[in-house]
Image 1 (tube, one colour):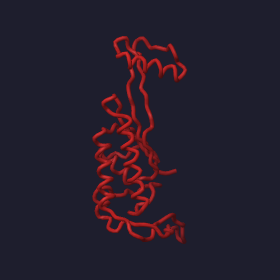
Image 2 (cartoon, rainbow, N blue to C red):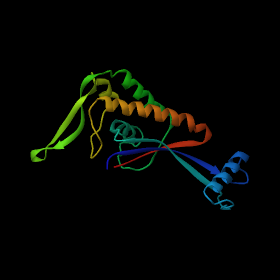
Image 3 (cartoon, rainbow, N blue to C red):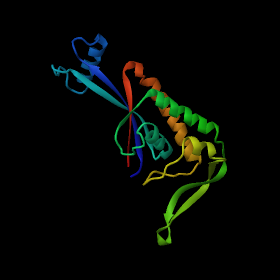
Image 4 (cartoon, helix red, strand yellow):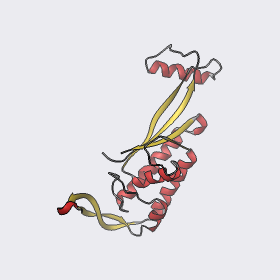
Length: 189
């Protein structure tokens, strides 16, 4: 249980007689790869390829950004198209937050214990916390939710941002829009 977040890249591939040779070749190769070699819908010979290109678990600050900037505020677990420009904006925000949020020694929350009266008590260990979370709170604030993970501004928050940069930069490089790829974000919890 918890917040799972997915980014996929999709691409239309046509097998039309008027399609470019490389597109028809790709269509035939993909149909062969799925065990349907020779299959062709004469009325509309095409397929759509979808690849999973990024995955997060409980990175609620990243999810909140997608909800506000891509989903129009609708946190409904539907799939939403997101442009390469929007993904690059998120990368830049993550870099800005990391740059403006130095980590210092502190106590981080690693779990919670249900105490008397049904109150949750945080369990801590030595770790790193953001010295002054003002930049993080301003640019990529955390979001609480049912099983959305921690809302502290600490080493785990920063690790989510570093992971976001790594995944999105790779996705943008490997699945460029100029080659017909489009990106889609979806969450579940």
